[in-house]
Length: 367
Image 1 (tube, rainbow, N blue to C red):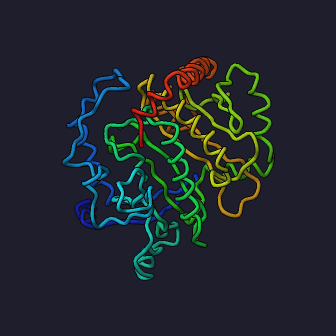
Image 2: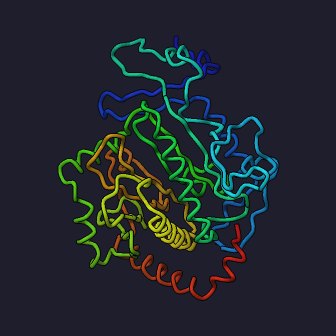
């Protein structure tokens, strides 16, 4: 008879592939410990209060926030920091994830331990590096409060870590994302993003690669079509922001470079600032909604030449139910056109607001 208790003390760490869908699943049993931290955080914050006050302070839970200055784990590996001078307080830093979904094996034998016992199924070691990018040394600061300079530095950190994680020959893809709010998957309130390298290309990215093979200019065509559509939200010199015609989420946002670029690493200084400008305005809009959200970057896999990188913001205003889980398709209750009207109005407002309160804002958000 099967007894699940036989597996309770076994740490399983492997990549598996589904025979029907060819989708991959990373099995990391050690990450169940992370759920305990989520429960502790829920006890310390009032998540029932849905009123978002952009200036409301959240009391720092010092006893379990390893992202705060003075509470860092001395054993963790710091991969990046700004400023680099360690005699000065850090403003942004990137460290190894305490509960990684992938990791570099300590030795060859560790990787070989994950072997195929049944040739019917595919299984391998989840090779890669998983980092946490701590975006601020202030626990109480929210993304909507970040200055343009702060967001630009975050974008530059993304690029630095992306380039470093892409270097190993074995790596095929780097996943870059930010979870904000408990229902988005964030386990801590302290603002942070995550970046992880993989030695395989995720399923959805494989599909996008095929689309760009058949039509390399598909996003340029979408830009041309949407610039004068009711789904247009905002644009600057480098990017256009729209709500997708077939949005998968309510208030779904797409941020698309106006010229083809393979990844975020191809952005120059001016383009980085333009991206920061858009992210900052979008985060302020999301603060008005008071909804959890995910920020995801679709960059080209290694050695792929036909691709057009883009960024999406996915507000989590509803939960996936049976239909979405079965079909992989979405049901939206807010039209993309209505969502665009909301973003368009507020992107303009935050643009005007910045010209009025720049000096005050820089003082309040001084790095």
